[in-house]
Length: 142
Image 1 (tube, rainbow, N blue to C red):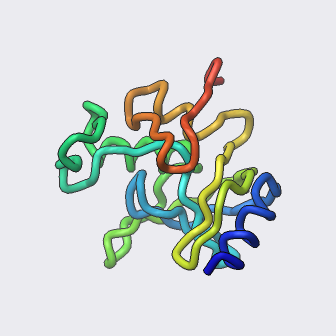
Image 2 (cartoon, one colour; image 1 turned 45 degrees about the vertical axis):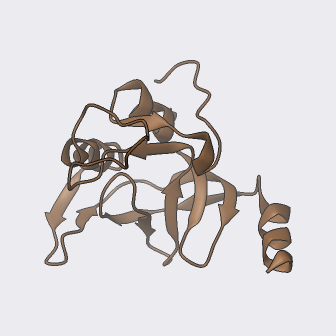
């Protein structure tokens, strides 16, 4: 286990791209064309079900609104799939690896010149969460 954590830490800061194809909600990983699953680091949106965990900061905007805003930032929704995921068609995101697990890659990602995590926090769709890969430090959102 410690070897796995060491390998993940050694790769932190590495840049990669992800062409988004599907999202479930603003907290779940974004599915990439290459099969990778990327979760935006340092933020938490309201769950689609609407309830945040007791004692945790929670954005006012709904989970559905956060999902839809993220889909728009990723090129716009092209379909709602039978499994509930939203299909998106957009340009590749540019990401910086924060950590990696067997479930997903935690990363700070940008679409064009827009830092997605900062956009979500700045627009009130998410809150900054240091325990989820570092607090978002955003000076401006384009």
